[in-house]
Structure formats: C-alpha cells, structure tokens
Amino acid sequence: QRWFTTFAIGLPGPTSLLTIFQTFLDGHLKNFVEEVQATSSGIIRVALELHKQVSKTFRKSAANFHYEFNIRHLSNVFQGLLVSQPDEFQTAEKFVHLWLHESERVYGDRLVSYEHLTQYNAIAQGQSKRGFPNFNITRFFATEAADPLVFCHFADNIQDKCYDQIMSISNMSIILEDALREYNELNSIMDLVLFEDAMKHIARISRIILNEGGHALLVGVGGMGKKSLSNLAAYICAYTVRQIVISSTYGINDLKDDLKWMYNKAGLKDEGVMFLLTDSQITNERFLIFINDLLASGNIPDLFAVDEVDTIVGAVTNRVKATGVVPDKKSCWDWFINQIRKNLHVVLAFSPVGDDFKNRARKFPALVNCTVIDFFQDWPEEALYRVGQQYMGPLDFGTDPAIRNGIEKFLPFSFKTVSAEAVEFKKKERRFVYMTPKSYLELLKLYMEMLESKRVESDTAINRLDNGLKRLRDTSEAVVKIEENLKVSLEDADVKKTTAEGIAEVVSKEKAIVEVETAKAQEESEKVAVIQKSVMKEQKDVSEDLAKAEPAVVAAMAALDSL
Image (cartoon, rainbow, N blue to C red; front, side):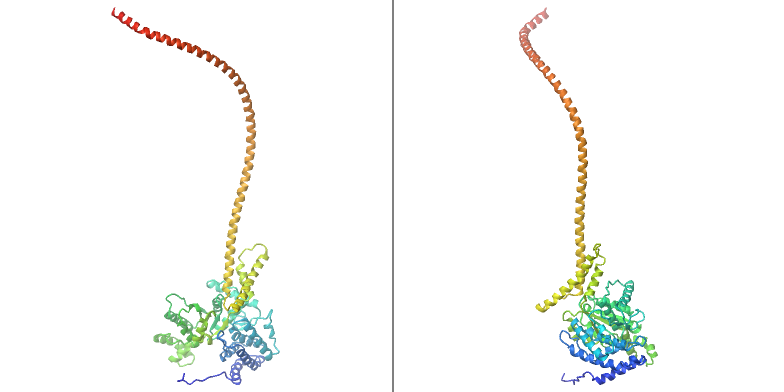
C-alpha cells in the first residue's frame, strides 16, 4: 500500500444528499398530483434519518458481515419510488406507504432474525410518525391482524406488470394460485403451498428482477423454497430460467458457454433471462469470478473471443444507429452490455450455514454489494400449519374432524417446541442444531410413511383375525351339521340295536339247543371212538395174520402154476 495514495470517501452530507435525491424525485413527480408532489422533501428527510438510524442500530460484525448501509441502499429506496406511475398514486398517503415499503425491502429484508426485524419496525414506525403524523402508519405494524404492506407488479394480474399496492392477502393468493396453476401446466409440477410469507417473497423477487440491473441474493437454510419461489417469480415476469447442470466434467468452459447463451438471448434477442444459481452448484470457486463481474458491471472480460465480439457488434449496429449514436465498436458493445443489464438478472440462492457464504462474500464483494438481499426467516406457525394441512389432506383420518384437526395442529407445535429447545441448547452448549423447513418436511414424510406402515400392519392383523374368525364360524357350522347327522345316525343305530338284540336273543336260544345237540354228538363221538379203536385193533391183528399166511399162499400159487 505504500506505493499508493489512499483516499477515504465518506457518505455525502445531508445537504448534498437532499440535493441529489430531490433532483431525481421532483423530476419523476412532475406529472403526479400536487398532493403527491408536496411529499417530496418530507420523504427525503425521513429517508435520510431512517438510513442514519438503521446504520447506527445494525452494526457490521463477523456474523452479520452484510450489515453495511451506504448510499447505494439509499439509491435503491429511491429507485423503488421512481417505479411509481401517476395513475396508481393519487394520494400522498399511498406514496408514503410506497416509501415505507421500499425502505423495508432495502433495510428490513437484509436482517437475519425476527428480533432485528422488530427493532427495524420500531425505528421505521417512529420516523414515519414524526415525518407524517397525519397518516395512519400504525396499522401496518399491529401485532395482530396487521394490514399487509406489499407493493408488487401483479396487484391486479400477472400480465399488466403495474407496480401497485396489494389491498388484501386473499386477492394476492388468488392471483398467485392461478399463476402457479398455469406454471404447472407448462412446466414440471411444483407442489407449492402459498402461505403469506411465501407470497411476499415472490413479490420481493419479482420486484428485484424487474428493475434494470436487478440481482437478488436469497439467503436461507435448505428447504425454504428459494428455488421454487424464484421459478414462479420468473414465470410471472415472463423470464426464461437458466440453471447450470452440474456433472463430473462441468468446468469453466462449460460455464462460459452457458453465460454466452444467456448473453446472446438477453443482449441480441432482447428477452428476459433469470440465471438461478445455488451454492451447491458452485463446484469450483473460480465460477464466482465470472459471477462477480456479471453482478458488478455485466461485462465479463474475455468471455467472448474477438471474432464473437465482432459478430455481436455487427448484429447490434443497426439498433445502435436507430438510437442516434455513432455505431462504432465501443458504442455497440456498451449498448450490448446495457441490454444485458436490462434483461439478464442473477438470482443467487445461498445458505448461511457454515463459513462458505462469509468467505465468498469477502472474496467476491459484488455478491453482497451489487445484489438486493432477501433473508428468508424461519417459517411462521401459520406457514407450518398450511404446509402440514396440505400434506395431510389426502390422508384418511375417519369421519371425526377432531382427529384431523388435532394432528394438523400438533405437527407445527412439535416443530416449534423442538426449535425452541434448539435455541436453548445453543445457549447452554454453544452448539448449533438447525431446525429447518426441510426438517419439517421430513417430519411430515416420516409421519406419512409410518402411518402407512402401521396401517398395513393393522390391515394384516385384521385380515388374520377375520380369517381366524371365519374359520371358527365355519367350524362351528360344521359341528352343528355333524351333531344333526349324529342324531340321525344314533336313531338308526338304536333301531339296528333293537333288531340286533332280537336276533341275538333268537341266536342265544338256538345256541342252547345246539349246545345240547353238541353234547349228545360228543357222547356218540366218544362211543364211536371206542368202537373205532376196537376195529383198528382187530384190523391190525388180521393184517398180521394175513402177512404170516401170505408166503404160504404164494408158495401154493407157485405150486399150482407148476401143475
């Protein structure tokens, strides 16, 4: 640093700032009604005082490194005022409401917690009362049933792009529900729950990217819906959404090709393009060199080769000539870059968890300095209830509505209770436990999966019980039939038994007779046996005598033969 002369340039004084912004604001309000024109000086004074109070209250720190408020933020407030049109702002009160809204978008959306947001609201309310005591500002800061302070480009419909005030959240919901339905018909379906905070974020994103050179930095933990809300906001603004597709081979040259495509579409075709980039897609920190240049000026050195630059210059020469400017190479290139700033808008979706966000913001200051920050706060209980209600909608909880109502109310209550315990855990143990909307969605999915699993188990048990009871009933019926058949069989058996007993009696009598006859036969048999024995003895004796006489007979026969 010893080779350079350092100049410290502070914020211009109140008189200089009043002169600067008075010139712009009075020039813009010259076609408005006198009542609105008369508020010019008062709005500038209150805006300067509010900026001063915010700068004193919210100091830059290591944790809140983006709490840095300078003349750029004042300019953003008045840039929002310059979007107003005479037909929509016929009263001074409405124009003051617009200033209050733009201040909240520039200062309030950068704050990291509800506590800081409450502090800012107190400061803004106090300054508004002092600067404009005749206007009712407190209705926007009521603790309950506060009126919505929302200005957007789709107050009546998404076609006119007229920047006006939303009078009721219900009308805003109808418009955005219709836009979401149209988006889902043309693109892959987004299952969004458009609760009040989500709709306000859509209004903020569309407000940023519809401004020339408007780039958004959406900061919030995972699952807050940053990408989905950005896609819907781009559809409302009629922009083409471009995202890089990360792969194992995606590198610097691929990023340059994507940027060239976006530059050609925005600069040559004059079409709106939203470049949506998340921190998970930054696989190489060198990507941020190109993003930093794009955010800062729109001119990325060495993005195009010399012949490609000549082609672009040749394509825009006639259009540059039509503006009355000499169409030399520098003028044509400057016109092309202005078209880029007009039509190409970057939306960065980063998470504040860890040190990556802080380190990247330190190395590449345009990430914070050249973007409008929209810090996504924790989902309110109403949002949790709405999301849970949509997830529980298809489930069958029976005919008693109290069961469904109790479950839908308990889910956000349990999440809030655990979140409160996580804060206490951080205070006592100095350790972070992040309870994010993604955790809540996982809770809902886990409940649905467990409910389905338990219902399958219950159905299986019920079927088993039904089958068992059916078998018992079948068995009981079979037993009754068997008993009836058994009665008939017993009657037949009794008849047969009687018959058998009669037959047995007859048989018994005949058996007695047979036994008597058998005894007689036995006696005769014994007598016959004695006779037989005697005969057998006599037969034996005769046989022996015959055997003795037989040789003599043979001899006699032989003698006879010799005669």
